[in-house]
Image (cartoon, rainbow, N blue to C red):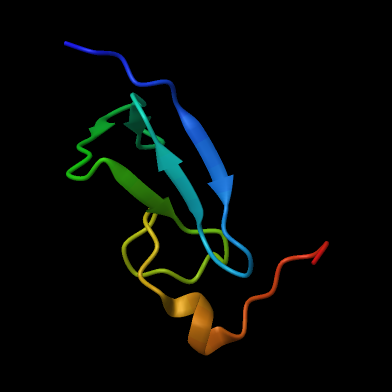
Length: 67
């Protein structure tokens, strides 16, 4: 088993892209299964599948600062 270093990259006006060996948990402490090598986490707070991004930020006009 190879260990891939975890990276978190903010996507401009979009989600946080998480790559590598990471574990995500619910607020109750239950593990959230990851089905892909890269996961997109919601930053706008409007996703219907939180903590993951569903693209709602586009229709909502979500913008990040510092562009």
